[in-house]
Each structure stands twice: as C-alpha cells, then as structure tokens.
Image 1 (tube, rainbow, N blue to C red):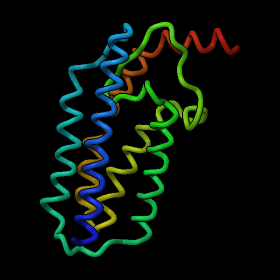
Image 2: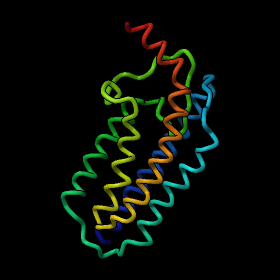
Image 3: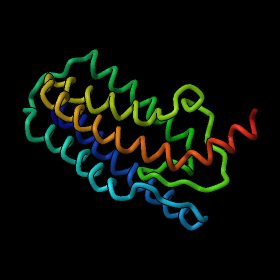
Amino acid sequence: MTVFWSVLLAVALARLAELIYARRNTQRLLAEGAREYGAGHYPVIVLLHAAWLASLAVFIPADTPVVPGLLVLFLLVQILRVWVLASLGRYWTTRIITLPGVALVRRGPYRFIRHPNYLVVVLEIALLPLCFGAWEIAVVFSLLNAAMLFWRIREENLALADRREIVQENHG
C-alpha cells in the first residue's frame, strides 16, 4: 500500500471512529435534556467532508510522493484534534448539541480559542491535499469549508450564548 493510501485510509477510519463517538455522545446528551441547534446544515457538513475525502481518492494518483514537512504538520494537527476531543470529552459531538445550565468547557485549547475544533478542520482540509501536491483540492474545499463554517459558527454562537453567561457568572 502506498503512503497516500495509508494516510487516506487512516484519516477515513479516524473520521468514522469520531462519528461513532459523536453519535454516542449526542444520544446521551439528548437523553439528559440537551437540545440540537442548526440541524438543517448538518447533512451539508457531512457531504462536504465526504466529498473532500472522495476527491482526494479520485484525483490524487496513488503513487504521488508525499511532501514530508507538510505530512509532519498534518500529524501535529492530529495531536491538536485529540486534545480537542479529550478536552470536551462527553460533550464532543459533530452536531451543535447544548445542555442548558451547564458551564462551557474552558480547559485544553478552549482556554485559548473559542472554536479550536474548527481550526483543526480548516488546517486538515488545506494540509492533507497539499501533502500530495493537490493545491486545487486544498483551495476548493478550503473555500467551501469557510462558507460552511461561517454558517455553523454563527449557529453555534447563538446556541451557546446562554451558557457563556453562566460561565461569566460563575467565574467572574
């Protein structure tokens, strides 16, 4: 198996595992009284990410050499991804799910940035194609992802507004 297919397979399997983890967390949170916001755009997000992975598989020849420095950078971003997931723990989902009355997570990368998971996604969507010289895929999907994130972050900020006030009351 080539480096390209090994990396793509690893990324696809990791995303599948994350979807399973997210679904479990979503079901548990909803059972505890959480609400979902922005559900209408979720299928578009799934389609965007599936199309990104598919475009890599279709348009990058399997024997394309890897750019080692960019692959190392991509792997470092995966460490940030794990830090995000570990920091949110049972609250991490791929949907906008919020449990009223619960303070927002302020540990890990959430101490420094409001939406670190989206930073990870932005970096991944650009970096992985660039690891194999596919700058066109990086540009197209980065632009599509930027539009999606504009929509999603607006929805998420509205959904979390009440919980931000709880954090401010409890910590300041």
